[in-house]
Image (tube, rainbow, N blue to C red; front, side, top):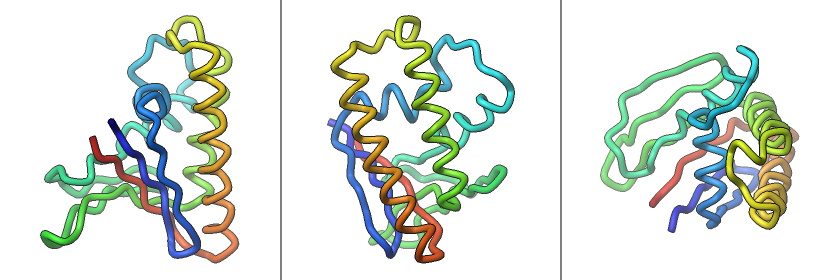
Length: 139
């Protein structure tokens, strides 16, 4: 089981669907025909760290990986809600357009789309509150 957590002081959503990890966070590894802009959006999601991994600090356009600072902490990808919204919306669009090559079933697609909608709600709350958002996963 893999759990992906998206949160800010304004709210949190935990996705316990392993397909979400495979088809959203790892979508950049799928054989897709995507533009350079789409690839850059997917790159944000591909950099979401495992919560308990010893990540090094890294960054990109509008995001950074923050390593754990103590044993009570974990590594997270920190980004603006706008940056993450664009990444999740790109993943959603590319999944719908490439369901066959990606290998996702109709039932999985609907479940993942529902989870993306919930994540977008968390991002909306964070944006309204002026907060950045943290994302990590545990497997």
